[in-house]
Amino acid sequence: MLIEIASSAPRSAPEENCSPLETIAEVAVRFDLTLRTLRFYEQRGLLNPIRHGRTRYYDAEQKLRVQMIVKGKQLGFTLLEIADFMEAEGRSNTVSGAFHLHTATIQTQLRHLVERRNDIDQAIAELQAALGDPNRKTDNRENSK
Image (cartoon, rainbow, N blue to C red):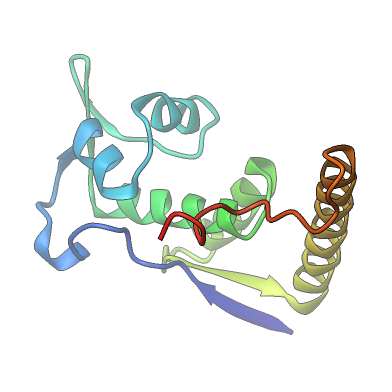
């Protein structure tokens, strides 16, 4: 069974309000990424922006691919896994901005993320214990209000 996981819209203006072509700098701002990150995704074959001289331009399809990469990373998938998902989308001749994942893939990723969270919780507990106060808050945002 395939389940669709839609990628969320970028932080800035919605797609309808953006120009058809945007420079790498504009896309970086739109998706809160660095230029280096976008170039890295291009080197890995995840993106293929239009090139005019040294300037990269991103059309609607490429911006949708950036959006999918960001969502995939938020869900904890590797770039190789994201590339596979996007390749599968490409084989269907549609780039919908959503991943179509098998239930088993989602369950495996959930197990992986829970394991990571448990490891992080254990590391936090050990560091708190090293400070001599196992109840010490690790998030000082509450204290700064």
